[in-house]
Amino acid sequence: METRDETAGKSFALTYVGWCTLDRRTTLPMLPWLVAEIRRRSEKGGFGPVMQPREVQLLLHSPFIRCVPSSSNSSSVFIFEHKAQLIARFIHNSNDLSYFAYLLRGQPDNPESGMSCHVFKAFDPNQVGLLIQRCSLSL
Image (cartoon, rainbow, N blue to C red; front, side, top):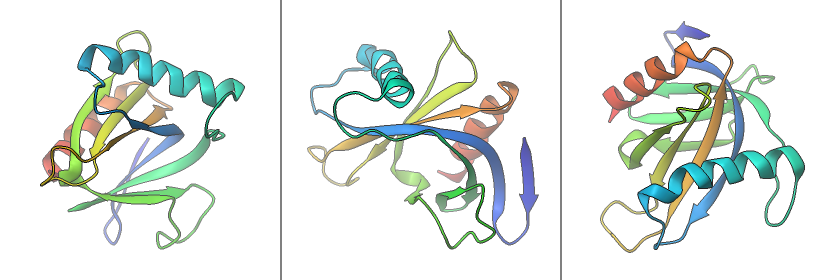
């Protein structure tokens, strides 16, 4: 579901599944496996940092993307915030259209800097394409 708030920009209700840092040797064909691994880890726990999936609002307020808890009435309480220009790639799972992820550059001027992958689940699979399009316009 998309909502519009003039002070906060565009907002999408999602479930934040989790994230992980990427090794420099990670290749594009490995990304679907990586997203699946983040999903598995959030469902079952396991090794490494475990995060319980949580309902969030993803706020698109150019030039930033901010993830806030759905339970918060204030957009100043947030889980994370990124500059949209640091998003390197979107990943949309063709097996389950409700899941998507994006890769985030650590430092845009340094090709050796680390990257992270953030995974989300949409309540409505049709909203994923719109969200990716809106995020891309913020870049």
